[in-house]
Image (cartoon, rainbow, N blue to C red; front, side, top):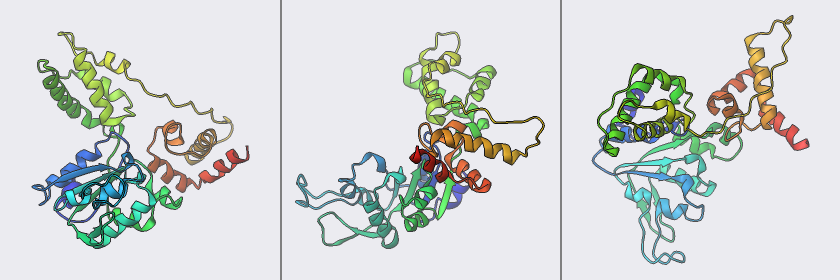
Length: 313
């Protein structure tokens, strides 16, 4: 939040990095509300939820008759956010053609509507967010390097809930207050054993999952106590595969780096070099993909080696 406050009132683009459900949109709204633009629009667009055929029209608008179905002029998300803040959520899902146009807007502050001839000038603060590993996507050619440099002028990493256990009591109590108001239940307070139970859970879905568990617990409330144990038992998630055991010899001394290297290599072999996504190495090891790639670079582990093995098989 200190980083948020430091950059709120500037026009520098901010890139929010973090797992799904960590609250990146909440941070984006805090950036907006702490700026001089707070009285103007805050617009959120999910880049991954728009079809590639329509994304130019959605972002930049279109003129009447520019394509079949364009019966009137339409303002895009940039025009709607003029004077305010535009959150480009899931920026890693933006198609290459749209990446080129976005880069131009960031550089020049102007664009053309689809089917238009004149330039439209806007004053928009850009906040981008993603759970993807953008540096890896740049290396793979799936994300433009020049756009990455523009967007990452001021990165903020939003940590997963399992790395901020001290926040769980306040977060959970806040969510309980919201749930009791929404469901018409009398005010409830967390007990010490409730907090310990919540702290012990790994929260793969982060704050979003915590909110769902709290909602279930309030709905299951029987008038006597808040049954968080039952609410957690009803949580459905995919259990990652268990990595194969390490080849260890009690007579051989191994450094910590050697053990970690061997473990990561075994998991990469299991996943065919896949790092992120369901069934990927990061999920299996229960670490952030950014953290895993950084550790792999330090240990000089090349993921491509395991992709090649899979291809040959």
